[in-house]
Length: 140
Ligand SMILES: [Zn+2]
Image 1: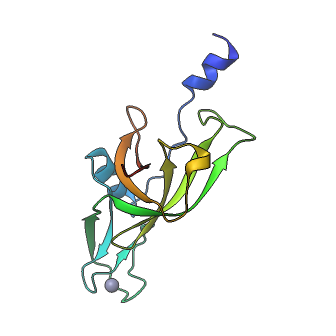
Image 2: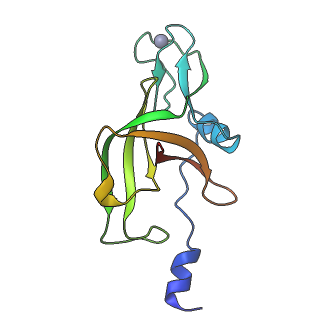
């Protein structure tokens, strides 16, 4: 196996799973992109935390997002590249129509065609057998 083949075989870094964020990755495995929704004041929040920042309630449930969002900001990775990421990998901040913002990969668009404010569709994307992450792509 040469060096280039080894780079392709490298796995994505694993997120640190804890009691607060486990639901997020379980929901993705089930094909849903969900965030925490406060059971008291209904505020949606991400990243996951134990307590509602608005009303201090500890009660919450997963709320599935519609998948519709807007590109708020992005960066494109060029150098240095860390396997398995490849040159031109796009990291995007997406705001769902429901309000929460998530950082994820933006696929299916050339760097020169990206526009802040563009509409995107977010889906649960199986990166490999064990890891599923949200992924954005431009709306058709
Ligand atoms: Zn609340």
